[in-house]
Amino acid sequence: VAAQKCRKRKLNAILNLEEDVCNLQTQKESLKKEHSQCSKSINQIKQKLNNLYHDIFSRLRDDQGRPVNPRQYVIHCSGNGNVFIIPKHLAKSEQKQDNRKEQKQK
Image (tube, rainbow, N blue to C red; front, top):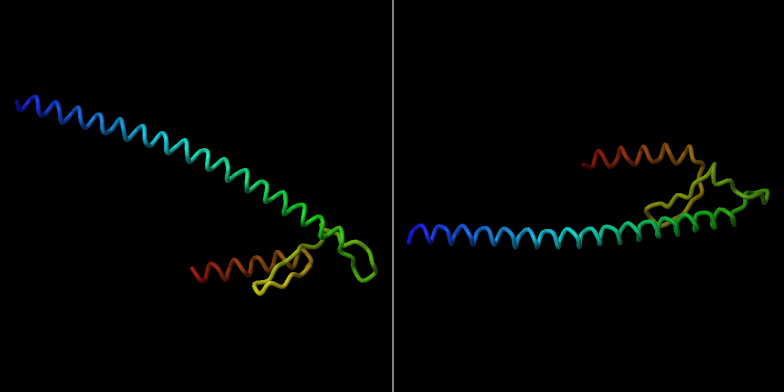
């Protein structure tokens, strides 16, 4: 009787583990699909942002009415919602300062 009970417990444990494996495989497939959808969404958003960026720069003009070169300038959004066009070299130094502030806060 003890051996039968032991075998039954072992069989139940195996069945439970097989069920867990099936559930985890289903969850894995679901997560793969979700990851794929998220990646597609991110790529679409990146493309839209890139298009917006080019559209904005195509409409911008300097003081003399010449188009603003997107290779020399970047769009910068401040924390209070203001948007600026600044030279790239200034943006890089500003990013470094922001990164230092974030590291200090951590």
